[in-house]
Image (cartoon, rainbow, N blue to C red; front, side, top):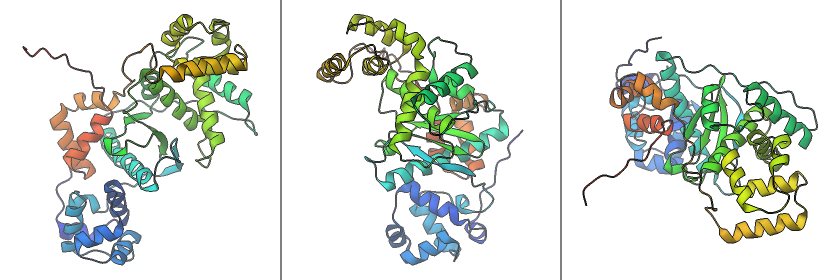
Amino acid sequence: MTGRLRPPVPAAAAAAAFAPHALALARRWRRMRKNELARQVGVTAAAVSQYELGQARPSAATLARLALALSMPVEFFAAGFSVPVTSGQAHFRSLRTTSQAERDQAEAFGELAWRVVEVVERQLRLPRLRLPHLELAEPTGPAEVRAAAGTARDAFGLGAAPVPHVVRLLESAGVIVLALPDVSERVDAFSHWYGQRPFVFLNPGKDDHARSRMDAAHELGHLLMHHDAEPGSQLLERQATAFASEFLAPSVALRDELPPRLDFDRLHELKRRWGMSLKALVYRGHDLGVYREHTYRRGMALLAQWGFPEPGDLGPREQPSLLGRAVQLLGGQQAAVHRLAAGAGLPPGLTGDVLAAGTEHVPELDVTPG
């Protein structure tokens, strides 16, 4: 389906078609308090609240100042852009270490990214969603979580083999995977449904191969098991972690491969084979009954002494690539950015940031003469 560029909207027309949700979204993205925004624009904080609640509409001049303060084009605030129908609430892994403002900003980035993806989908056919549907027994115990991970592996045709690339697997199944921007560095990872398509957001600051795989599998667990669950529960987080561990390395295979004693040479081999950290392998060994409590504690103490990054580097983190490939099909970076920015009503710079978040970045070899 061919997308059409939206012509720039004059401030007067944007004010006449003002969308309250857009103002709240832009303010959350910029992490600006209502009183701060009001001070910059020359209105009261109560007026900003009324704009966001749809109880009042800014004049064309006020809207132009709002757009300037929030670094958004005036057309961003005009009605006509879709608002995503979200399912449930976002599952954050870092509720205790992040502020509400940081989580609001990360969620705002998700909705802005959804705008860009929606415009991409008008021009390209992205992979259709094909996540397995899981029916979990209540209450959901460890056995049910392991069974859910096994069902998911079967649905993806993995058998008992390692997952070659977790992020690519999610993308091929229709999940949009994005790296969080630098402004959200304290947000660990989260997932959210926008309409019929789920998004997974990963922290690029954790530039570790094994961790990125675990994070991606953890969010897959939330998407499959906790679609309608209230987020924030430590029980749900433990379930998602258990799902991820079983999804990455099924117990029936791993139990037979783990060394009966703390043989780190062998554990390094398994780290490379399954793409899991030594810490995760030692934990799984204890969970599966291979290592007794004192052996487990000794292994964890040794790993704590070695620190992070742990020995046996597996290389850089797994990265998404779906939006990067879409950019190539849309005529290259510059052409795609301006076309998609116009379609989404976003600044080109922010649109480029969204596309970069879904693009694989390969380190360049420096061959500059010394």
